[in-house]
Image (cartoon, rainbow, N blue to C red; front, side, top):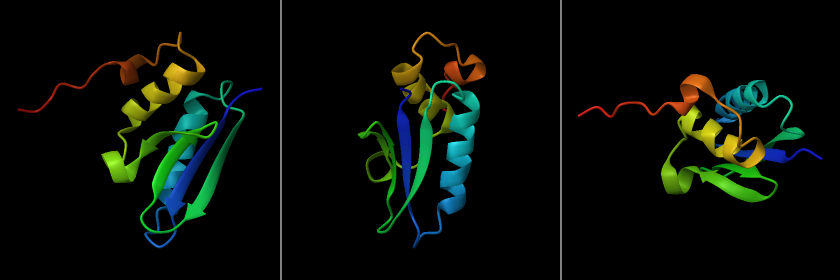
Length: 95
């Protein structure tokens, strides 16, 4: 059975569109590797991404994720041999 990914988002902060966009990006990239993506309404500034119950991203700890980084985190758990193309390449840091 493929993993369940949950995106819990703050309704008070109106982050539904951000959560839905994140879900769309992950479903597009991992269409055969994810069994389900659930959007879970929350409160208190929450924006957490969990894979089979394990938190892989928390806005309170790390801010909002960059999509390439989030895709790498999910890929490493659900399809470690997959090449993500441009998402696999580290962006040069601006100095």
